[in-house]
Length: 533
Image (cartoon, rainbow, N blue to C red; front, side, top):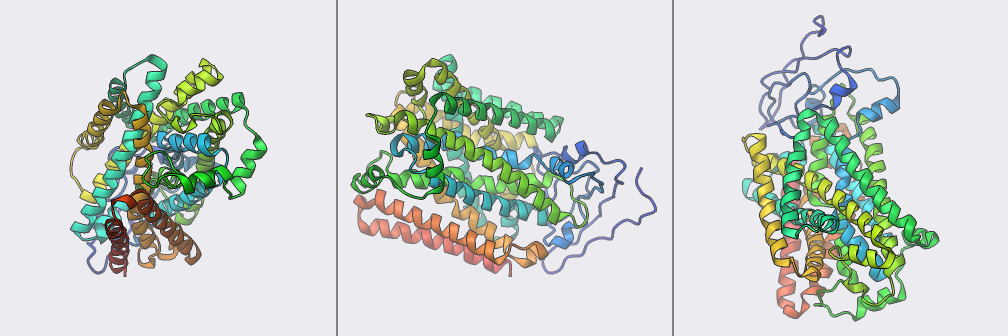
Protein backbone atom coordinates (compact mmCIF):
# COMPACT_ATOMS: atom_id res chain seq x y z
CA UNK A 1 0.00 0.00 0.00
CA UNK A 2 1.27 3.46 -0.85
CA UNK A 3 2.46 5.71 1.97
CA UNK A 4 -0.47 8.15 2.23
CA UNK A 5 1.15 10.17 5.01
CA UNK A 6 3.72 11.49 2.59
CA UNK A 7 2.57 14.44 0.47
CA UNK A 8 2.56 14.14 -3.28
CA UNK A 9 5.58 15.79 -4.92
CA UNK A 10 4.92 19.21 -6.40
CA UNK A 11 4.75 19.85 -10.07
CA UNK A 12 8.12 20.59 -11.61
CA UNK A 13 8.66 24.00 -13.15
CA UNK A 14 10.79 24.61 -16.21
CA UNK A 15 12.23 27.86 -17.49
CA UNK A 16 12.82 29.19 -20.97
CA UNK A 17 11.32 27.16 -23.78
CA UNK A 18 10.57 24.13 -21.63
CA UNK A 19 7.00 23.14 -20.94
CA UNK A 20 5.45 22.89 -17.51
CA UNK A 21 5.00 19.43 -16.15
CA UNK A 22 1.30 18.58 -16.07
CA UNK A 23 1.37 15.91 -13.43
CA UNK A 24 3.59 14.24 -10.88
CA UNK A 25 4.53 10.73 -10.04
CA UNK A 26 2.74 8.78 -7.35
CA UNK A 27 5.33 7.17 -5.14
CA UNK A 28 5.27 3.56 -4.09
CA UNK A 29 6.73 2.27 -0.87
CA UNK A 30 9.72 0.00 -0.81
CA UNK A 31 7.62 -2.78 0.69
CA UNK A 32 5.83 -3.33 -2.62
CA UNK A 33 8.84 -2.97 -4.89
CA UNK A 34 10.75 -6.11 -5.81
CA UNK A 35 13.91 -6.79 -7.75
CA UNK A 36 11.79 -8.27 -10.52
CA UNK A 37 9.69 -5.13 -10.69
CA UNK A 38 12.79 -3.05 -11.14
CA UNK A 39 13.56 -4.78 -14.40
CA UNK A 40 10.22 -5.36 -16.09
CA UNK A 41 9.81 -2.31 -18.28
CA UNK A 42 8.49 -1.84 -21.77
CA UNK A 43 11.61 -1.37 -23.87
CA UNK A 44 9.74 -2.55 -26.94
CA UNK A 45 7.36 0.36 -26.55
CA UNK A 46 9.46 3.54 -26.25
CA UNK A 47 7.40 6.24 -24.52
CA UNK A 48 6.92 9.77 -25.72
CA UNK A 49 8.92 11.30 -22.91
CA UNK A 50 10.02 8.95 -20.12
CA UNK A 51 10.32 5.17 -19.76
CA UNK A 52 7.31 3.49 -18.22
CA UNK A 53 7.63 2.10 -14.71
CA UNK A 54 5.83 -0.70 -12.87
CA UNK A 55 3.77 1.90 -11.02
CA UNK A 56 3.01 4.05 -14.03
CA UNK A 57 4.00 7.56 -14.94
CA UNK A 58 1.71 10.35 -16.01
CA UNK A 59 3.02 11.96 -19.16
CA UNK A 60 5.85 14.41 -18.54
CA UNK A 61 6.92 16.91 -21.14
CA UNK A 62 10.58 17.04 -22.09
CA UNK A 63 12.46 17.37 -18.80
CA UNK A 64 15.98 18.66 -19.28
CA UNK A 65 18.08 19.05 -16.17
CA UNK A 66 19.02 16.58 -13.50
CA UNK A 67 16.82 18.20 -10.89
CA UNK A 68 13.84 17.25 -13.07
CA UNK A 69 14.99 13.65 -13.23
CA UNK A 70 15.33 13.33 -9.47
CA UNK A 71 11.57 13.39 -8.97
CA UNK A 72 10.53 10.95 -11.65
CA UNK A 73 10.62 7.20 -12.16
CA UNK A 74 11.31 6.57 -8.48
CA UNK A 75 10.91 3.34 -6.56
CA UNK A 76 12.25 3.40 -3.03
CA UNK A 77 14.00 0.10 -2.42
CA UNK A 78 16.35 -1.01 0.34
CA UNK A 79 18.96 -3.41 -0.99
CA UNK A 80 20.92 -5.64 1.35
CA UNK A 81 24.30 -5.47 -0.36
CA UNK A 82 26.11 -3.70 -3.18
CA UNK A 83 26.15 -6.98 -5.10
CA UNK A 84 22.34 -7.22 -4.97
CA UNK A 85 22.10 -3.70 -6.35
CA UNK A 86 24.53 -4.62 -9.12
CA UNK A 87 22.38 -7.62 -10.08
CA UNK A 88 19.31 -5.39 -10.24
CA UNK A 89 21.10 -3.08 -12.70
CA UNK A 90 22.60 -5.90 -14.78
CA UNK A 91 21.17 -6.26 -18.28
CA UNK A 92 21.53 -3.11 -20.40
CA UNK A 93 25.31 -3.41 -20.64
CA UNK A 94 25.14 -6.99 -21.89
CA UNK A 95 22.56 -6.07 -24.53
CA UNK A 96 24.78 -3.19 -25.59
CA UNK A 97 27.88 -5.40 -25.75
CA UNK A 98 26.33 -7.64 -28.40
CA UNK A 99 27.27 -5.03 -31.01
CA UNK A 100 30.92 -5.68 -30.09
CA UNK A 101 30.73 -9.32 -31.21
CA UNK A 102 28.47 -9.06 -34.25
CA UNK A 103 29.41 -10.58 -37.64
CA UNK A 104 31.05 -7.31 -38.68
CA UNK A 105 33.47 -7.65 -35.78
CA UNK A 106 34.11 -11.30 -36.61
CA UNK A 107 34.87 -10.28 -40.22
CA UNK A 108 37.43 -7.69 -39.08
CA UNK A 109 38.90 -10.10 -36.52
CA UNK A 110 39.48 -12.99 -38.89
CA UNK A 111 40.96 -10.75 -41.58
CA UNK A 112 43.29 -9.12 -39.05
CA UNK A 113 44.44 -12.50 -37.78
CA UNK A 114 44.79 -14.23 -41.14
CA UNK A 115 46.67 -11.37 -42.82
CA UNK A 116 48.60 -9.73 -39.99
CA UNK A 117 48.88 -12.41 -37.31
CA UNK A 118 48.85 -11.02 -33.80
CA UNK A 119 50.08 -7.59 -34.94
CA UNK A 120 46.71 -5.82 -34.72
CA UNK A 121 45.54 -7.10 -31.35
CA UNK A 122 46.64 -3.81 -29.77
CA UNK A 123 44.36 -1.97 -32.21
CA UNK A 124 41.50 -4.23 -31.11
CA UNK A 125 42.30 -3.48 -27.47
CA UNK A 126 42.51 0.27 -28.09
CA UNK A 127 39.28 0.48 -30.07
CA UNK A 128 37.47 -1.62 -27.45
CA UNK A 129 38.63 0.65 -24.62
CA UNK A 130 37.62 3.67 -26.69
CA UNK A 131 34.23 2.06 -27.21
CA UNK A 132 33.85 1.40 -23.49
CA UNK A 133 34.49 5.05 -22.75
CA UNK A 134 31.89 6.21 -25.27
CA UNK A 135 29.33 3.70 -23.98
CA UNK A 136 29.80 4.87 -20.40
CA UNK A 137 29.20 8.46 -21.51
CA UNK A 138 25.99 7.36 -23.26
CA UNK A 139 24.85 5.53 -20.12
CA UNK A 140 25.69 8.59 -18.02
CA UNK A 141 23.57 10.82 -20.26
CA UNK A 142 20.60 8.45 -20.03
CA UNK A 143 20.85 8.07 -16.25
CA UNK A 144 21.31 11.75 -15.49
CA UNK A 145 18.58 13.15 -17.73
CA UNK A 146 16.18 10.20 -18.18
CA UNK A 147 16.19 10.95 -21.89
CA UNK A 148 18.12 9.09 -24.53
CA UNK A 149 20.48 10.55 -27.11
CA UNK A 150 18.00 10.69 -30.00
CA UNK A 151 15.52 12.63 -27.84
CA UNK A 152 18.22 15.13 -26.91
CA UNK A 153 19.04 15.58 -30.59
CA UNK A 154 15.37 16.24 -31.32
CA UNK A 155 15.18 18.74 -28.46
CA UNK A 156 18.29 20.73 -29.33
CA UNK A 157 18.78 20.63 -33.10
CA UNK A 158 16.72 22.35 -35.78
CA UNK A 159 14.58 20.04 -37.98
CA UNK A 160 16.86 20.04 -41.06
CA UNK A 161 19.95 19.10 -39.03
CA UNK A 162 18.28 16.47 -36.90
CA UNK A 163 16.71 14.88 -39.98
CA UNK A 164 20.16 14.71 -41.55
CA UNK A 165 21.59 13.15 -38.40
CA UNK A 166 18.72 10.67 -38.34
CA UNK A 167 19.44 9.74 -41.97
CA UNK A 168 23.12 9.14 -41.16
CA UNK A 169 22.20 6.98 -38.18
CA UNK A 170 19.66 4.96 -40.16
CA UNK A 171 22.28 4.43 -42.86
CA UNK A 172 24.65 3.01 -40.25
CA UNK A 173 21.89 0.80 -38.82
CA UNK A 174 21.02 -0.57 -42.26
CA UNK A 175 24.70 -1.23 -42.99
CA UNK A 176 25.10 -3.02 -39.68
CA UNK A 177 21.91 -4.98 -40.22
CA UNK A 178 23.15 -6.23 -43.59
CA UNK A 179 26.23 -7.64 -41.88
CA UNK A 180 24.28 -9.20 -39.04
CA UNK A 181 21.55 -10.82 -41.09
CA UNK A 182 23.99 -12.04 -43.74
CA UNK A 183 26.30 -13.38 -41.02
CA UNK A 184 23.53 -15.41 -39.40
CA UNK A 185 22.41 -16.61 -42.84
CA UNK A 186 25.95 -17.85 -43.58
CA UNK A 187 25.85 -19.77 -40.30
CA UNK A 188 22.52 -21.36 -41.25
CA UNK A 189 23.95 -22.27 -44.64
CA UNK A 190 26.94 -23.98 -43.03
CA UNK A 191 24.72 -25.90 -40.62
CA UNK A 192 21.76 -26.85 -42.81
CA UNK A 193 22.65 -25.97 -46.40
CA UNK A 194 19.95 -23.27 -46.54
CA UNK A 195 20.37 -20.78 -49.44
CA UNK A 196 21.56 -17.35 -48.40
CA UNK A 197 18.36 -15.54 -49.45
CA UNK A 198 16.15 -17.95 -47.51
CA UNK A 199 18.45 -17.59 -44.51
CA UNK A 200 17.98 -13.82 -44.62
CA UNK A 201 14.20 -14.22 -44.39
CA UNK A 202 14.47 -16.75 -41.56
CA UNK A 203 16.87 -14.56 -39.58
CA UNK A 204 14.81 -11.40 -39.99
CA UNK A 205 11.55 -13.16 -39.11
CA UNK A 206 13.10 -14.89 -36.08
CA UNK A 207 14.49 -11.59 -34.80
CA UNK A 208 11.05 -10.00 -35.08
CA UNK A 209 9.41 -12.88 -33.20
CA UNK A 210 12.05 -13.05 -30.47
CA UNK A 211 11.63 -9.36 -29.73
CA UNK A 212 8.13 -10.12 -28.49
CA UNK A 213 9.73 -11.96 -25.56
CA UNK A 214 9.84 -8.46 -24.12
CA UNK A 215 6.10 -8.72 -23.56
CA UNK A 216 6.96 -11.18 -20.79
CA UNK A 217 9.21 -8.54 -19.24
CA UNK A 218 12.67 -7.25 -19.87
CA UNK A 219 14.36 -9.96 -17.80
CA UNK A 220 13.31 -12.87 -20.07
CA UNK A 221 14.61 -10.98 -23.09
CA UNK A 222 17.87 -10.15 -21.32
CA UNK A 223 18.28 -13.81 -20.36
CA UNK A 224 17.70 -14.85 -23.96
CA UNK A 225 20.43 -12.47 -25.09
CA UNK A 226 22.64 -13.87 -22.35
CA UNK A 227 22.16 -17.40 -23.71
CA UNK A 228 23.15 -16.25 -27.21
CA UNK A 229 26.28 -14.54 -25.85
CA UNK A 230 27.13 -17.72 -23.92
CA UNK A 231 26.79 -19.83 -27.08
CA UNK A 232 29.06 -17.43 -28.95
CA UNK A 233 31.65 -17.36 -26.15
CA UNK A 234 31.70 -21.16 -25.83
CA UNK A 235 32.00 -21.59 -29.60
CA UNK A 236 34.94 -19.22 -29.96
CA UNK A 237 36.52 -20.57 -26.78
CA UNK A 238 36.29 -24.10 -28.17
CA UNK A 239 38.02 -22.99 -31.36
CA UNK A 240 40.76 -21.31 -29.31
CA UNK A 241 41.37 -24.42 -27.20
CA UNK A 242 41.37 -26.73 -30.23
CA UNK A 243 43.73 -24.63 -32.36
CA UNK A 244 45.86 -23.55 -29.37
CA UNK A 245 47.46 -20.22 -30.41
CA UNK A 246 50.63 -18.91 -28.79
CA UNK A 247 49.42 -17.33 -25.53
CA UNK A 248 52.55 -15.23 -25.09
CA UNK A 249 52.21 -13.87 -28.62
CA UNK A 250 48.57 -13.03 -27.90
CA UNK A 251 49.49 -11.15 -24.70
CA UNK A 252 52.28 -9.28 -26.48
CA UNK A 253 49.96 -8.38 -29.35
CA UNK A 254 47.41 -6.94 -26.93
CA UNK A 255 49.83 -4.92 -24.82
CA UNK A 256 52.60 -3.84 -27.20
CA UNK A 257 51.60 -1.47 -30.05
CA UNK A 258 53.70 -2.56 -32.99
CA UNK A 259 53.42 -3.86 -36.54
CA UNK A 260 55.27 -6.79 -38.02
CA UNK A 261 57.63 -6.25 -40.94
CA UNK A 262 55.20 -7.95 -43.33
CA UNK A 263 52.34 -5.74 -42.13
CA UNK A 264 54.38 -2.60 -42.73
CA UNK A 265 55.42 -3.84 -46.15
CA UNK A 266 51.82 -4.60 -47.06
CA UNK A 267 50.68 -1.18 -45.85
CA UNK A 268 53.13 0.69 -48.05
CA UNK A 269 53.18 -1.51 -51.16
CA UNK A 270 49.51 -2.32 -51.73
CA UNK A 271 47.77 -0.33 -54.42
CA UNK A 272 45.89 2.56 -52.94
CA UNK A 273 42.75 1.80 -54.87
CA UNK A 274 42.84 -1.94 -54.21
CA UNK A 275 39.60 -3.42 -52.94
CA UNK A 276 41.45 -6.13 -51.06
CA UNK A 277 41.90 -5.56 -47.39
CA UNK A 278 44.75 -3.14 -46.76
CA UNK A 279 46.07 -2.43 -43.29
CA UNK A 280 44.39 0.97 -43.01
CA UNK A 281 41.04 -0.42 -44.23
CA UNK A 282 41.09 -3.15 -41.59
CA UNK A 283 42.17 -0.82 -38.76
CA UNK A 284 39.57 1.84 -39.59
CA UNK A 285 36.98 -0.89 -40.08
CA UNK A 286 37.93 -2.32 -36.70
CA UNK A 287 37.16 1.02 -35.05
CA UNK A 288 33.87 1.25 -36.93
CA UNK A 289 32.69 -2.26 -36.14
CA UNK A 290 33.61 -1.96 -32.45
CA UNK A 291 32.19 1.53 -31.80
CA UNK A 292 28.90 1.49 -33.68
CA UNK A 293 26.95 4.77 -33.87
CA UNK A 294 23.55 3.25 -33.17
CA UNK A 295 24.91 1.51 -30.06
CA UNK A 296 25.38 4.89 -28.36
CA UNK A 297 21.68 5.65 -28.89
CA UNK A 298 20.73 2.17 -27.71
CA UNK A 299 22.72 2.26 -24.48
CA UNK A 300 21.44 5.70 -23.47
CA UNK A 301 17.91 4.29 -23.81
CA UNK A 302 18.42 0.89 -22.20
CA UNK A 303 19.73 2.29 -18.91
CA UNK A 304 16.38 3.99 -18.38
CA UNK A 305 14.78 0.59 -17.80
CA UNK A 306 16.02 0.76 -14.20
CA UNK A 307 14.14 2.92 -11.72
CA UNK A 308 16.29 5.24 -9.63
CA UNK A 309 15.90 6.32 -6.04
CA UNK A 310 15.95 10.06 -5.31
CA UNK A 311 19.54 11.19 -5.62
CA UNK A 312 20.62 7.71 -6.70
CA UNK A 313 21.78 8.67 -10.17
CA UNK A 314 25.48 8.71 -9.22
CA UNK A 315 25.34 5.20 -7.76
CA UNK A 316 23.37 3.98 -10.77
CA UNK A 317 26.11 5.30 -13.05
CA UNK A 318 28.70 3.43 -10.98
CA UNK A 319 26.72 0.20 -11.20
CA UNK A 320 26.23 0.56 -14.95
CA UNK A 321 29.96 1.25 -15.28
CA UNK A 322 30.86 -2.03 -13.59
CA UNK A 323 28.30 -3.97 -15.62
CA UNK A 324 29.32 -2.40 -18.93
CA UNK A 325 33.02 -2.97 -18.23
CA UNK A 326 32.40 -6.66 -17.51
CA UNK A 327 30.30 -7.06 -20.66
CA UNK A 328 32.78 -5.32 -22.96
CA UNK A 329 35.70 -7.21 -21.39
CA UNK A 330 33.87 -10.41 -22.34
CA UNK A 331 33.48 -9.13 -25.90
CA UNK A 332 37.22 -8.34 -26.01
CA UNK A 333 38.02 -11.91 -24.99
CA UNK A 334 35.74 -13.30 -27.72
CA UNK A 335 37.24 -11.03 -30.40
CA UNK A 336 40.75 -11.92 -29.23
CA UNK A 337 39.91 -15.61 -29.59
CA UNK A 338 38.87 -15.07 -33.21
CA UNK A 339 41.97 -13.04 -34.12
CA UNK A 340 44.26 -15.57 -32.44
CA UNK A 341 42.57 -18.59 -34.06
CA UNK A 342 42.98 -17.24 -37.57
CA UNK A 343 46.47 -15.92 -36.83
CA UNK A 344 47.57 -19.37 -35.67
CA UNK A 345 45.82 -21.28 -38.42
CA UNK A 346 46.33 -19.14 -41.51
CA UNK A 347 48.84 -16.29 -41.05
CA UNK A 348 51.73 -16.53 -43.49
CA UNK A 349 50.12 -19.23 -45.61
CA UNK A 350 49.18 -18.90 -49.30
CA UNK A 351 45.71 -17.57 -50.10
CA UNK A 352 44.96 -16.16 -46.65
CA UNK A 353 44.03 -12.79 -48.17
CA UNK A 354 40.99 -14.54 -49.64
CA UNK A 355 39.61 -15.67 -46.27
CA UNK A 356 36.48 -13.82 -45.19
CA UNK A 357 33.30 -14.35 -43.22
CA UNK A 358 31.65 -16.12 -46.14
CA UNK A 359 34.25 -18.89 -46.48
CA UNK A 360 35.93 -18.95 -43.05
CA UNK A 361 33.91 -21.99 -42.00
CA UNK A 362 35.06 -23.92 -45.05
CA UNK A 363 38.71 -23.03 -44.34
CA UNK A 364 38.38 -24.09 -40.70
CA UNK A 365 36.76 -27.37 -41.70
CA UNK A 366 39.49 -28.20 -44.18
CA UNK A 367 42.31 -27.27 -41.80
CA UNK A 368 41.03 -28.58 -38.46
CA UNK A 369 38.12 -30.91 -39.22
CA UNK A 370 34.38 -30.59 -39.79
CA UNK A 371 33.51 -30.22 -36.08
CA UNK A 372 35.34 -26.87 -36.08
CA UNK A 373 33.24 -25.78 -39.04
CA UNK A 374 30.08 -26.58 -37.07
CA UNK A 375 31.38 -24.77 -33.98
CA UNK A 376 32.14 -21.69 -36.09
CA UNK A 377 28.67 -21.84 -37.66
CA UNK A 378 26.99 -22.00 -34.23
CA UNK A 379 28.94 -18.97 -33.05
CA UNK A 380 28.13 -17.10 -36.24
CA UNK A 381 24.41 -17.83 -35.87
CA UNK A 382 24.43 -16.66 -32.24
CA UNK A 383 26.33 -13.47 -33.13
CA UNK A 384 24.11 -12.70 -36.11
CA UNK A 385 20.78 -13.40 -34.42
CA UNK A 386 21.55 -11.49 -31.23
CA UNK A 387 22.99 -8.46 -33.01
CA UNK A 388 20.07 -8.42 -35.46
CA UNK A 389 17.68 -8.14 -32.53
CA UNK A 390 19.62 -5.35 -30.83
CA UNK A 391 19.85 -3.57 -34.18
CA UNK A 392 16.07 -3.71 -34.41
CA UNK A 393 15.85 -2.31 -30.88
CA UNK A 394 18.20 0.53 -31.73
CA UNK A 395 16.27 1.34 -34.89
CA UNK A 396 13.05 1.74 -32.93
CA UNK A 397 14.64 4.05 -30.35
CA UNK A 398 16.36 6.14 -33.01
CA UNK A 399 13.18 6.56 -35.06
CA UNK A 400 11.07 7.34 -32.00
CA UNK A 401 13.59 9.81 -30.62
CA UNK A 402 14.45 11.72 -33.78
CA UNK A 403 11.04 11.74 -35.46
CA UNK A 404 8.73 11.51 -32.43
CA UNK A 405 6.49 9.10 -34.29
CA UNK A 406 3.16 8.39 -32.62
CA UNK A 407 2.64 4.88 -33.96
CA UNK A 408 1.94 1.54 -32.34
CA UNK A 409 5.03 -0.43 -31.29
CA UNK A 410 4.35 -3.31 -33.68
CA UNK A 411 3.95 -0.89 -36.59
CA UNK A 412 7.18 0.86 -35.68
CA UNK A 413 8.93 -2.52 -35.51
CA UNK A 414 7.67 -3.46 -38.98
CA UNK A 415 8.83 -0.12 -40.39
CA UNK A 416 12.33 -0.37 -38.95
CA UNK A 417 12.74 -4.03 -39.92
CA UNK A 418 11.50 -3.40 -43.48
CA UNK A 419 14.00 -0.56 -43.94
CA UNK A 420 16.81 -3.02 -43.29
CA UNK A 421 15.30 -6.19 -44.78
CA UNK A 422 15.06 -4.93 -48.36
CA UNK A 423 18.79 -4.06 -48.58
CA UNK A 424 19.66 -7.39 -46.93
CA UNK A 425 17.67 -9.35 -49.51
CA UNK A 426 19.19 -7.32 -52.33
CA UNK A 427 22.72 -8.00 -51.08
CA UNK A 428 22.02 -11.71 -50.59
CA UNK A 429 20.57 -12.03 -54.09
CA UNK A 430 23.40 -10.08 -55.74
CA UNK A 431 26.33 -11.62 -53.85
CA UNK A 432 24.85 -15.08 -53.39
CA UNK A 433 27.44 -16.70 -55.63
CA UNK A 434 30.20 -14.11 -55.17
CA UNK A 435 31.54 -14.72 -51.68
CA UNK A 436 34.67 -12.68 -52.31
CA UNK A 437 32.52 -9.66 -53.14
CA UNK A 438 30.44 -10.27 -50.02
CA UNK A 439 33.55 -10.14 -47.83
CA UNK A 440 34.66 -6.88 -49.47
CA UNK A 441 31.21 -5.41 -48.85
CA UNK A 442 31.35 -6.45 -45.18
CA UNK A 443 34.70 -4.72 -44.73
CA UNK A 444 33.50 -1.47 -46.26
CA UNK A 445 30.32 -1.59 -44.21
CA UNK A 446 32.63 -1.58 -41.18
CA UNK A 447 34.30 1.50 -42.62
CA UNK A 448 30.85 3.08 -43.04
CA UNK A 449 30.28 2.74 -39.29
CA UNK A 450 33.52 4.61 -38.64
CA UNK A 451 32.56 7.38 -41.07
CA UNK A 452 29.14 7.89 -39.43
CA UNK A 453 30.47 7.57 -35.86
CA UNK A 454 31.36 11.29 -35.38
CA UNK A 455 27.75 12.27 -36.15
CA UNK A 456 26.66 10.31 -33.08
CA UNK A 457 29.70 10.94 -30.89
CA UNK A 458 29.77 14.73 -31.32
CA UNK A 459 26.18 15.30 -30.09
CA UNK A 460 26.77 12.82 -27.26
CA UNK A 461 29.88 14.63 -26.02
CA UNK A 462 28.21 18.02 -26.45
CA UNK A 463 25.25 17.06 -24.26
CA UNK A 464 27.28 15.09 -21.69
CA UNK A 465 29.68 18.02 -21.30
CA UNK A 466 26.91 20.56 -20.67
CA UNK A 467 26.31 21.47 -17.04
CA UNK A 468 22.93 22.89 -18.01
CA UNK A 469 21.82 19.42 -19.08
CA UNK A 470 23.80 17.18 -16.72
CA UNK A 471 23.95 19.38 -13.60
CA UNK A 472 26.48 17.93 -11.10
CA UNK A 473 26.81 14.73 -13.15
CA UNK A 474 28.40 16.63 -16.02
CA UNK A 475 31.32 14.79 -17.59
CA UNK A 476 34.69 15.72 -16.10
CA UNK A 477 37.05 17.90 -18.11
CA UNK A 478 39.65 15.13 -18.34
CA UNK A 479 37.13 12.58 -19.61
CA UNK A 480 35.67 15.09 -22.03
CA UNK A 481 39.08 15.95 -23.50
CA UNK A 482 39.95 12.26 -23.87
CA UNK A 483 36.64 11.55 -25.62
CA UNK A 484 37.06 14.50 -27.99
CA UNK A 485 40.59 13.34 -28.82
CA UNK A 486 39.30 9.85 -29.59
CA UNK A 487 36.59 11.27 -31.84
CA UNK A 488 39.12 13.52 -33.59
CA UNK A 489 41.41 10.52 -34.12
CA UNK A 490 38.53 8.68 -35.78
CA UNK A 491 37.88 11.62 -38.11
CA UNK A 492 41.58 11.78 -39.04
CA UNK A 493 41.70 8.04 -39.74
CA UNK A 494 38.63 8.37 -41.94
CA UNK A 495 40.29 11.18 -43.86
CA UNK A 496 43.46 9.17 -44.40
CA UNK A 497 41.44 6.21 -45.63
CA UNK A 498 39.45 8.43 -47.98
CA UNK A 499 42.63 9.86 -49.48
CA UNK A 500 44.25 6.43 -49.84
CA UNK A 501 41.31 4.67 -51.40
CA UNK A 502 40.09 7.37 -53.78
CA UNK A 503 43.31 9.12 -54.79
CA UNK A 504 42.96 7.89 -58.38
CA UNK A 505 39.72 9.84 -58.80
CA UNK A 506 41.64 13.11 -58.72
CA UNK A 507 43.16 15.18 -55.95
CA UNK A 508 40.55 17.92 -56.30
CA UNK A 509 37.64 15.54 -55.74
CA UNK A 510 39.36 13.92 -52.78
CA UNK A 511 40.14 17.26 -51.14
CA UNK A 512 36.59 18.51 -51.65
CA UNK A 513 35.18 15.33 -50.13
CA UNK A 514 37.48 15.53 -47.11
CA UNK A 515 36.69 19.21 -46.65
CA UNK A 516 32.94 18.65 -46.75
CA UNK A 517 33.21 15.81 -44.24
CA UNK A 518 35.25 17.86 -41.78
CA UNK A 519 32.95 20.88 -42.20
CA UNK A 520 29.91 18.69 -41.53
CA UNK A 521 31.39 17.38 -38.27
CA UNK A 522 32.41 20.89 -37.18
CA UNK A 523 28.95 22.24 -38.04
CA UNK A 524 27.24 19.61 -35.87
CA UNK A 525 29.59 20.44 -32.98
CA UNK A 526 28.97 24.18 -33.41
CA UNK A 527 25.17 23.88 -33.52
CA UNK A 528 25.21 21.55 -30.55
CA UNK A 529 27.33 23.96 -28.56
CA UNK A 530 24.94 26.79 -29.39
CA UNK A 531 21.95 24.71 -28.32
CA UNK A 532 23.25 23.86 -24.84
CA UNK A 533 24.47 27.33 -23.83
